[in-house]
Image (cartoon, rainbow, N blue to C red; front, side, top):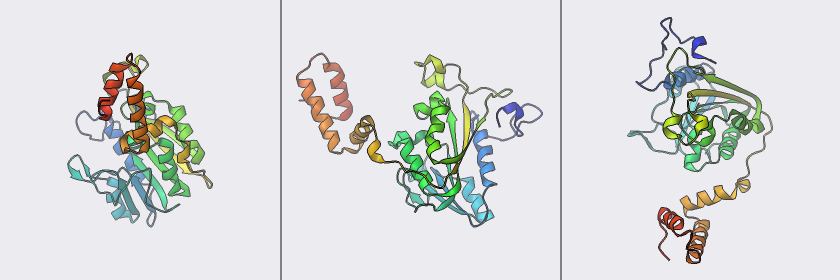
Length: 274
């Protein structure tokens, strides 16, 4: 639905027929999008949901329709409730064989992958690895709302380029853009006040549907940039972590001009004083 004014869920009174929690204006769009997903699935098909959380309407629908639902999540609990995931796993390493699923769904998940140090290209490579040729990836993300910089900035050209190596067909559909006559959701000024280009941007939900092509080239982890490798090393305490720490200590001992900045970094990394 390109605009709320054209949406079939808009009532004659100018309100959304889909009831969402108070203040969660984008949730109505997500509910409508997921409802459309459920009507695509057929008995006997396999569906994987990435980041399923503690509840999923697709799982409930699967019982009624007869398709096989699987879910993965990195957390065993979500907001105090146990997750319904059939496997505790990251999108970086999906524990299913190649070409296993007819559909792969990621609802409000992809924008958070980088928070768990998952490279977007690597995550998509795994997603399309377990998807059958001709199968569909159904992804929806918030734009100008939260998550990684790519999603907050709303760089749709860059986002499309991430899917292109795997796609026969790509469909982008913007829900609640523009939001009239419903109220606009402006989240970027609150969290990204230092980026004037985002001031006044109204948040919306992007529905991404991608048909997998027959032959795809999977992502090679060795192509990761040095900054990504260092970031992972700092979190996982790999040998690169200790090399980075040693470099900080060595540089700090011979340079006083950067003393304050390096001390702050040392504190952040829990590095003992030299």
